[in-house]
Length: 356
Image 1: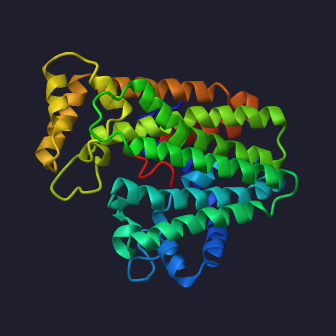
Image 2: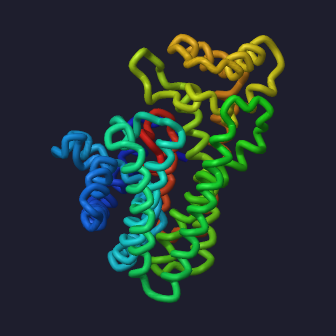
Image 3: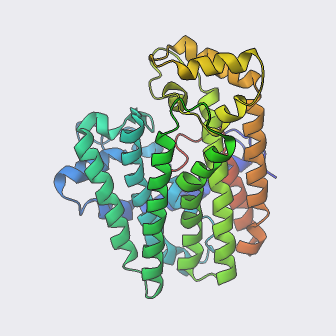
């Protein structure tokens, strides 16, 4: 199994990079074409959000750093036969648009001011523009899926609509977890299921379904995606606990800043002792936290075992996901690439944003 501590210079990271580069090469033109059909105001917000332009409309220096992890997840379990690959590209484009729309909404709801190393779109263009662009991207995704053959087109559009509603419900539940000290680990995992795991399940299974895989392979891909979704979110939570916090790091450790009780915090609050009491005091405080308070909170959570618990959970979900790969992918090289990709994706500090 690839080592999750692999750096960008290792063979594991190299395999993941090759896969992403192939996806970006084929999906980026389709993304730009779809966004180009939006009305001008919405198009400008979307072009900024996808890092093609900066806030002035000039080509962005961040464009070359695009991850397109969502599209890469859709293409992850697709046979490398050129015909199969091509059949899945429209769907990969659609889900990247849909998730882009979700993130535009998510940043507003969570008051997140940074997205992928740049100011969040709502801080640049305003809340109405960000929200309406997010909605437009999700509707455009449904339009793209209408181009797929029937009856599959109706099926996947209906499933995407249901999935987006589930994510929305999860977002509402998540927003209610600020300073909620009675929030349990089980409840937190249910929110992860709604916000991330269910969405990842749809994203991953879409590629095999569009490319003509057997129904059994598509079902296994959906379960694989579900487990991967849990690993993605828990790894993102771990990044929140590990990120260096300084005076200018407004976009870092956002869940800690907003005092959202995540699964890791809920786990730490079950650990008796002085550290637990200090964590409770932090989450009961309503004043804006200082960088020093955030650093102290990170240390307290580590003392309560939150880091170790998250690492163990991420590893467990990844192991269970990897165990399904032989049921989904026949080609051994493709399975190796898929395994490498998900381990790099779920390595803290290498994500930027996992679902980008």
